[in-house]
Image 1 (cartoon, rainbow, N blue to C red):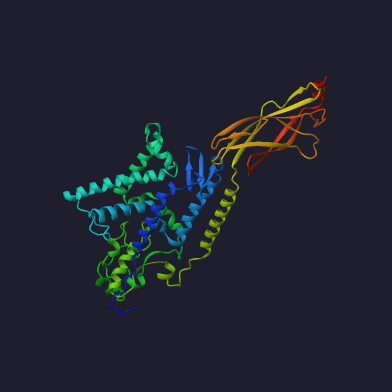
Image 2: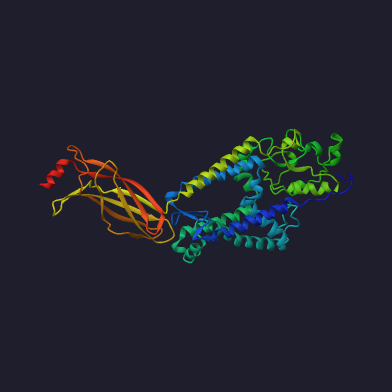
Length: 477
């Protein structure tokens, strides 16, 4: 550290790093819906076509067993992030925060100069001035346009862009989609322009959850009372407003009572009061104090650290503690399980149901007895190309005889995304059972496959009903 009055080199503000993260997330969110590999999207949950696209692999709605894994990964990821870094999700990733920064810092402050400084978020513009009213109207108009873009961007993860714009060309035939776009855009306008950070404070349930997840090693924005002094008493009542007053009680207190950390806070709290639900870990207060104390040749009184290290002075923050390792193990396990299950995707979905009639018997011209069983095959091609399908049937090894496919007699084609119903008739001329009292239910194995695609094969279990012996004898006579 340099001499007392020498200025410290001010590091790059956390706010700048947040802007980089915001830009990256915005670009990813806008571009991702447009990227396709073999006509599949990175993520698309299409209720219109009953499809789930994940990592450029297309799944049918019958394969939505992957969706719970995604939800568990999402929630466990956010909870683990909170245990490790406090409400860092809110300050660095949450769309609400990103949109507020775009509207307040970019549009109102940088673009229109409606606000004087980004560092003063407490003082609202004087709306009694006509010039400010015009600027405010322009700011709202710009945000209205951006709200529709953001709402459309959200919908692109449920209705792909190629379909979205086609549907929007005829909105009256797609009123649910059109209405969702309007409602979500209006919500964003109200939320960002009027509700503002009150959404984070009063509406969002996450702030209530975070207090349960915190421990002494959780990293958050903290005011160092050991160096700065106690501005608030144990009842959270403010007792000092000037540095001289504070230093009379605590001579070594370094806080200048400039309140830069207060004026810059987007949720209008005083970080010196201690942990508060409203704090979103944006670290704006850390930046403000770093600049002020840096000019005095001292490190910031507000730092991104833990109670264990800063307040209690027990040692260094333990990042990879058992609780964090448990979250990592769970997340890795879920990802591995999802990958394994996703890799077993079937490109052909097949359901087999027997017809109500158990069997039919007929006598051929050569005297042979034919026993038929009829089935309904419901087939769906989940691959993005038209394919021809067929199947074969096998009996158990202990059953002597054969089953013939009477219908269909040749392969049939199935187009992608269309469920095809096919009537299948199996026949045997062999005596598969000689039970004189009961019909015999024989388990059979059906292997369905796609021609010219050896890897696309599915196996299904079914049954073949063979009549009791007296019925066979009556037919012979």
